Length: 370
Image 1 (cartoon, rainbow, N blue to C red):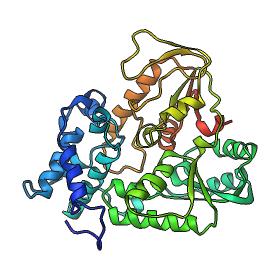
Image 2 (cartoon, rainbow, N blue to C red):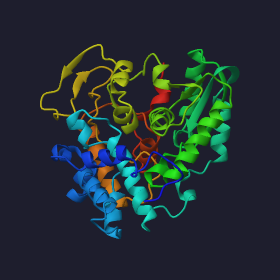
Image 3 (cartoon, rainbow, N blue to C red):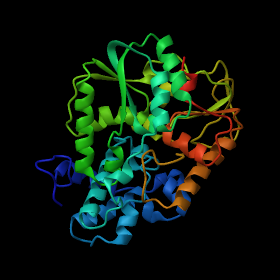
C-alpha cells in the first residue's frame, strides 16, 4: 500500500500493523452490544472479523474484493462492541485500523465515496443568519469553532448556546464553521483527511486566540486526540463546552451522549456530573449495561455501553435498512426507560430524529446549559 510522503499514520508503520494484529484477536464478548451485529446478525461485521480481512489483504493472503470492501466499510465506527471495552485498551485503536483498512481497499480499487464533495455538508444561508444573530463577538482570548454538522443540524439551539456563553462570561474573539475532515478518514481518504485537519488547525491558529472552544464531541476529538495521533501540533488550548458549563438543566431525562463524548473522549462522567440527581434509586431488572434509575434529573446511567443512534459523520456506504435497525434499537432502549425528556448531545443523532419525525420530547443539550 502506498502512502503520501513519509506519513507515519500508515499500515506500513509497524505500530499500526501491531494494532491491526491485536484487533484481529478477540473472543467475541462484545457481540451482545455491537450495533452492526445486532442489526444484521452477521458476524462478518464484527470488529475482529473486519480486522482479520484487512490484515489478510495487507499480508497478501486475500485478494481485495467488493464483498471484502462491504465488510470493511460496514461499521458505523461507534466504538461500541470493540475489543477495548472488554480489555481496557485504547478506545481509538480499532478506529485507526478501520480507517487505514478502508484506505487499503479504496486504493485497491474498491472505494465507497464517489467524491470528496459527497462527504461535505452544504451550508444553508438561513443557518448563517441564525448563527450570526445568536453568537456575540466581543473580542477576547477565546474563539468558537463549530463543526459543520453542529452548525447545520441543531435547530434553534444556537440561540440558547449564544445566551449561555454570554451568561457564562465567555468573551469570543469570533467563530467559524467547517468540516473537521473526519468523514474523509471514515471513507479511507486519509491524505485528504490529514490535509483538511491540518488546514483547520492552521486556520484556527491564525485567529490569534489562546483557546478554541468546541461544542461537539467530534470537534473536540478531531482537534485533540486525532490531531495528536497524526502529529499535527497546535498553538492553542482546546476547551469543550461541557467543561465550561456548570450544569445541564434536565428533568426526568434520558441523556444521549453520543459515541464521541461517551466512548472516544470518555466524557460520560462529566455528563453525569452536569446532570447529577438529588436522589437516585436503581430500577429493578434494568439491563446489565444500561442501568436505569428512579431519579429527578437523569434516569439513565452514563457509561461507554449506550447504543448509538446513527453514525456520527456523513456516511455513504452503510445500507439504509441497517441504519434504521441501529436507530430503532437505540430508540427502543430509550423508550423502555419511560423518560419524560430526551436530551441529545450529538448533531447527527438530532438530525436523524428530526428527519424521521421523532423529535417529540427531545432537546439539544445546548438549550439546557447553565
